[in-house]
Image (cartoon, rainbow, N blue to C red; front, side):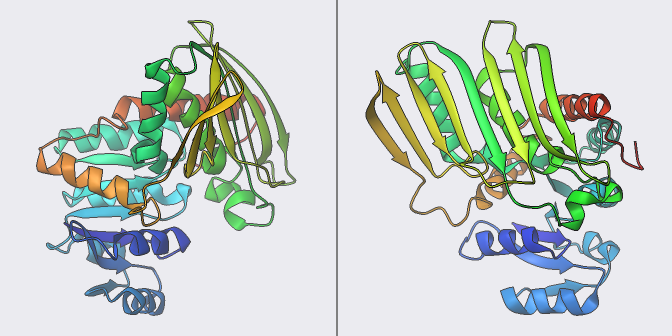
Length: 322
């Protein structure tokens, strides 16, 4: 499968590195608004095609899948462009700026029978699926509370502080802890309590989110751009707990039962950097004629976008496209 990347920023480099050793999928083309940047990227990864316009890339008949690696603020227009040209699309998280944009893109993709999925990479990783297996095994008893935290020092990054780039911690980091909670505790959320610190530009820089579920479970989540932290996820049950090292990219799982370590599971040795799994899932789905991935269904993407819209409304965080 041949992949075309729109946007030549750092995350595009991660994708190119992930697919370089693979035989199942390869980066075929890169597109950037800067011709020089596109050519440098193509030369670095030995790509056949470098385009200075996104229209050229989506018009390339050799491209099977388009990976949208531009800022959140531009996902809608670039994804729409790909769909209009009949290209399957892998859209980097957060899927769009808001739920309205997400609804339009998914409806358009369904109408044109084009595959589309969100590149929330943790949904596709083997260790993420292993956590679900461990929970179902009963090794920690009945899971009742979950905590997840993800913070980095990013207070000076343009994509974080600028409203026109859909800044703030939520769409960049908070989306991971929300996904972590929903992957393991489900979506039947009956109550949400939050707190948020806004930066000088009105963007959310730190937030805590507490979710109560219909079955009595609770999730306490933190995300922020003003500190470094352990990035841990912990699922606590009646007989033990599961600790996930790095909710942003699971690298290690520890299973503790009655406060004793009983199992330690590391990421697969063959894993390049984790970005490859979402592309391989796209390939599998496309070969089977699916329009969405069961690992990240369209309804889940839409539900999370609506959840984040509601959080931003509560905090008073607004983007120009809202």
